[in-house]
Image 1 (tube, one colour):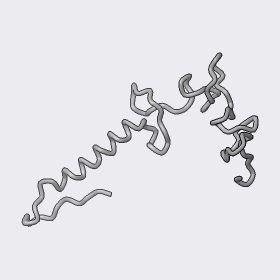
Image 2 (cartoon, rainbow, N blue to C red; image 1 turned 60 degrees about the vertical axis):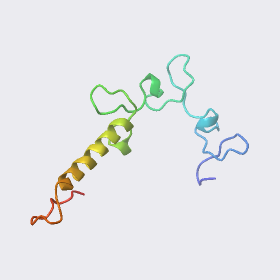
Image 3 (cartoon, one colour; image 1 turned 135 degrees about the horizontal axis):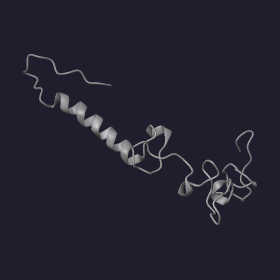
Image 4 (tube, rainbow, N blue to C red; image 1 turned 90 degrees about the vertical axis):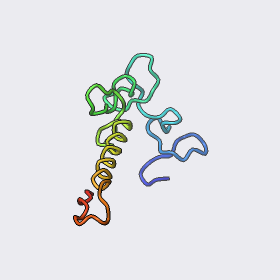
Amino acid sequence: MVCGSTECKVPSCMNRAKSRGFCWSHGGGTKCKEEKCEKIAISNGLCWAHGGGKRCAVEGCMRQAYERTDNLCNNHFQERQHSATAATEGETANWHPDDEEKPPPMDQ
């Protein structure tokens, strides 16, 4: 058990209890305030399907976003990562070791 937290009431479950003594997997957490929705609220009392959580920073994209991906959905984050890698590789693609000039510096 983690210091200062409670384990889920379900026997053999070692997850932290969120509310009512249960972890998210076993019904803990705050329920979405949308009528008849049984999902767990992420933010502002709403589950992701009803407007809780962050959306992708790309205009028109309504996918879920995360701080760890710079507020982009996974698709747009991967796209950006791929573009950055391709641009860096493209800078040295035309350079040959026999060239007198040094290759362009690689960005971090």
